[in-house]
Image 1 (tube, rainbow, N blue to C red):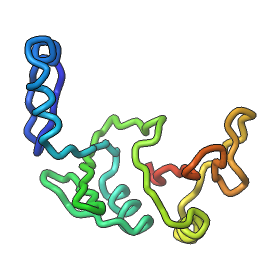
Image 2 (image 1 turned 180 degrees about the horizontal axis):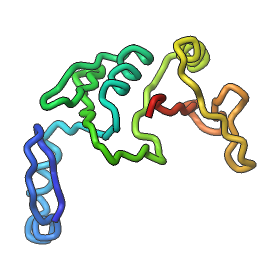
Image 3 (image 1 turned 90 degrees about the vertical axis):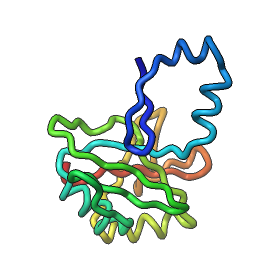
Length: 145
């Protein structure tokens, strides 16, 4: 069984049966809906402080102690508490910025720490910017996990 979450209503169905019986059903279900992302944190108050105060993003209280991270163009990311939360080992949120250096400088002033990679196959500069692809990329971790 797979889970599709739509407006926080969980709908359970077997993807294999739908895909093999009628591919148009799954296409219609997914193309005609607005998707949103979510991730867990172990401390909602620290997450609210990090995303709202440190990064300056629009964070609002959601239902049942959850948070909504309200982004441009009415995109919302659902943040929920999970006592046994483990931080992701991969990127979960990306932002396009006009000027990576200026943005990073301001974020560093606000207390954000960027990750420096020094692997021979994957290396950032001393500031934390990866130059081997476009757009330029820099990574930071949520503080106060």
